[in-house]
Amino acid sequence: MNTAGNGRLAGKVAIVTGSGSGIGRGCALMFAREGARVVGADIDAAAAQDTVRLAAAEGLHIDSLQPCDLTDPAQVQALVDFTVARHGGLDVLVNAGAFGAFKWIEDMDYHADWKRTLSGELDVVFLPCQAAWPQLKARGGGAIINFASANAHGAFKPLPALAHCAGKGGVLAMTRQLAMEGGAHGIRANTISPALIETSATRIPLSTIPGFRDAVLDKTMIKRLGQPEDIGWCAIFLASDEASWITGADIPVDGGSTAW
Image 1 (tube, rainbow, N blue to C red):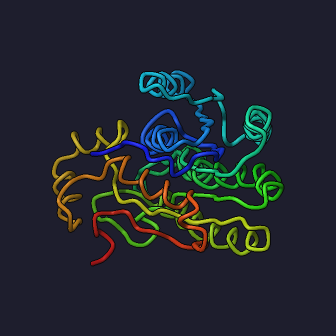
Image 2: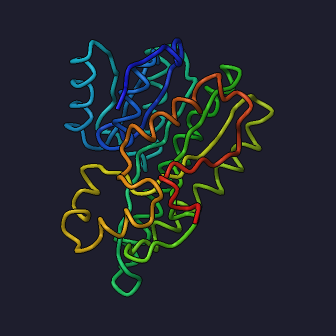
Image 3: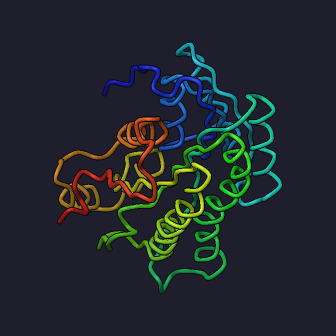
């Protein structure tokens, strides 16, 4: 997959949460290739630092604040303050960090699974948006990119995703409201709704649950698993000036899985 940059985000300052792995890592690296000044954040300090190392191996630079607990308002504010102190402002917020517990309703613990997932999929979006909002307003506008999911639009029979569906459905609705509140300030807010993306986390069920990989592929029109770069290209577009009249939108990047 071609990942070469063309400077589409040159001059923009971007925070990418969850930069230590998966979609967050993919977005952080791809944004840096496109000329953005990227600040990553992850609760996993070693993983976040590895992303910094991968960028340096390409001759790129990513700043990173880790460990950063995105459910802690003080740590989230510190992330925004660090970014502004380092780069003088903020143009783009990519909320890729998340946690979700995947269990059937009968097996789900209220605190450890349900409440933790809602915090790990809603608080980790709300708190960075709230902390970044004054900086985006001061910049005269900017872009917020959140991640809903194909699971926010429909059920997927093999996956025990009740809490995840609730969390991502909330992100979808919250982002529409952010777009409305941000319109007067030039702040755009959009969601990307991926289907299952092949990452270090999803490789476990893909390789251990009998028939799961086949079920995922059967659900898609394009018969391959999604990659972080598939999501990264859409995020680059939404962060760029090319998307200056797009807000309140949800873009499915799912191989066609929600189209039937």
